[in-house]
Amino acid sequence: MEFDTGPFDSESDVESVGRKLAALIRPGDLITLSGPLGAGKTTLARGTIREFCGENFAPSPTFTLVEIYAKGDIELSHFDLYRLKDAEEIWELGFEDALDQGICLIEWPEKINKILPDGRLEISISVESNQRHIHFRHNGAWAERLNRETLNF
Image (cartoon, rainbow, N blue to C red; front, side, top):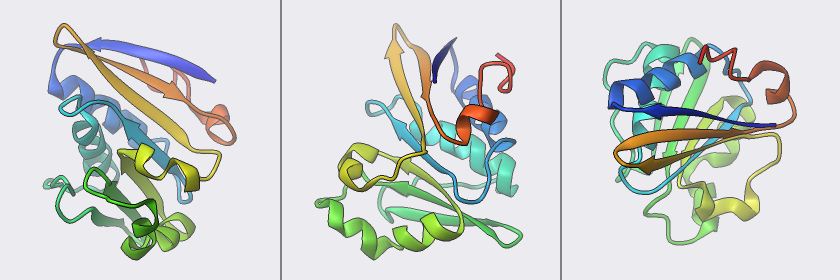
């Protein structure tokens, strides 16, 4: 299933999409965030992290490659793979454990497309005339819980 949302005029609008998404995520979820530099991937992730984990400060993992947050005993791992040189490096970042035990948000997933499992939520953000458009593509368990109405657009 696929659908588009937007246009969004501000960073806070994109963060709001992430906050609404937080109400739907569960352990075992994998969410990928694609789009050009500056499109709003980290902003959307930050909204999800803030709403789900209650974190006020959620830095971009551009240099650390992964930041881990917790809500009780559930871990949410936020990966930024922009600087990843080889797809196999993902295993050194604890990716397997993150997939098995928590929730994964991955920016720049195209770096590891060949090893990403099915059943993920794919979010891509495009920018046209300073407005963001967000495209959702999903299947599996996501098909039962995500649509334009569940995000209140």
